[in-house]
Length: 433
Image (cartoon, rainbow, N blue to C red):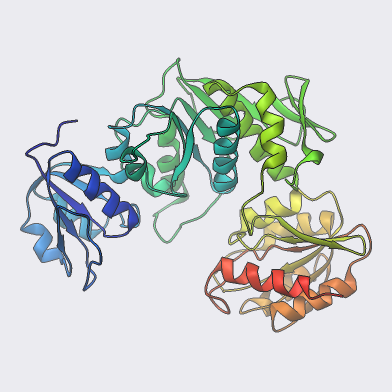
């Protein structure tokens, strides 16, 4: 892609937008960075910042290339205004992929993307192949392209927002973790959300690989396909006891790692399959997994006390994440759940609660609603705060149980974000005697 002498407009002055603007300017374009906020701090060198950008202003602009940040609605009025006189419209990730020449392992899904992305980076690096985790997690791909030492491979986490604006992005390996309803505030239907994610496979051919969780409906694929699951032995990657296996052959003992839960075993399967395709050595897989520390707030083991494991899954901000966390547990669970009222239907969780949960402790804005519903499946108690939930959960748990914080909704009723919620849980658990 030749940008020298071209006019490039970038919408959104967050990290992705600034990275795209810097890349375009480095390639010789005349770049303007637009944002609706009153101020754009620290704009890239050689880029013209334009704060306070309005719809009316957008309609008056013309450019050779319009680059959209993922946080801006691709189909909203703001983008429509700036698009009227733009020759081409793409996103930051699409811009960067036109300049990146290494191997691309792209990961999407409703849940599990970040852990899998980090696992890919760990395995590739352990194998001696330089790799950077980027995209929807870590640094934008545009920043990776601008590094002094550009890595040989990238673990590219992709959200539906980023996939909306691709054109030629062609992953060497595309990983589909799972799919469930989310982001319904942005999409008109669940099909629109799924179709955006399915674009990860759009440009692949028979030289590429698709890794898909067994049972997921992704349509016909041009790429070769491998499957994975922890629920049966019929997939290419499966679980036999504590062993991750490929077509029946043992690869690594997951019990030797810090990864907890069946969903993390599936994250590891997807990462292993992707990395072996790109050139990682089989010997490096176990070494990498043993060294790996899972991301905080994703079924993170905080401590074991009196035979009880305390797990922080504060990142579970939707129903699918909560369901996955419960499904993955091999121990009886005392569940701590609750938070902001998002208008979600928790009825489908009742069979999972009956199967895995001995007691539920609910808190937050949605506590009364959850207590009424969850009581149909398990004994449920209401408390006001997360700290109270930890104390009560500890008193209800027996040796061999797990006390699991997996809220199933967002945290903004009582916390700054899921990280803050998880930190409060960690502190409360560490204070238990």
